[in-house]
Image (cartoon, rainbow, N blue to C red; front, top):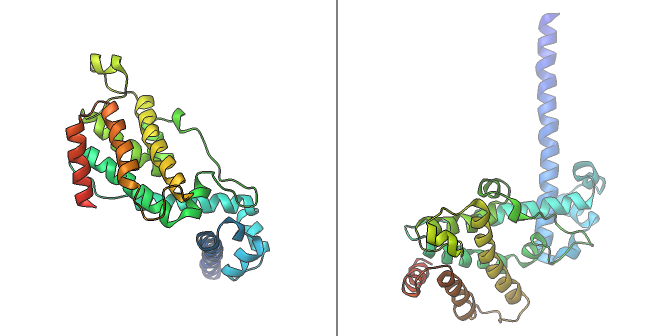
Length: 250
């Protein structure tokens, strides 16, 4: 009897694993289908029937695996942020300011190549009135940014490295005069300044205000980034050298 119980236990465990794997597979297929529809056709394509059809399953599966379209769209945005994080993961150099320029260029490239996903991730568009969830990053520590917002963490990380290398400061005269280490709040705030700069440029370029050939990158994006770096304490000469290093690496 014990032998049969053991055998049945093994069979039962195997079936449980197979069921779990099947559920994950269906969910992954639906998510993959939704991401593909968004990238190719835009947010209006995120419809229950279209997603289910692309995934080769029933519309009921959307509710079984996601609880509805709102959670599916949130999962699509989360997958976009994961892909964005991977795209921003590039080798660092000894020059953190050059890496900051590189980060901006890589950031822009992803947005240009995935405009629908980019807009959905950052709330400038919605799918059937459903927006991706967002939270206030300015209340987070550097460690929390690293854990919860990996794409923004790339910007914060390279800004923090630039501060530690004494290339830029928090913008606070008191901190600079006293030689105080920047707090997490100030590091994140400066990172947010660069994020706002890059994001603003990208959104205007996606809207067509800067053309579609990338001609505005040097006179607008690189120039604005350079001016902010100088305003935060770097020298124009060193900024120029870092920009040239980043351009050569790209």
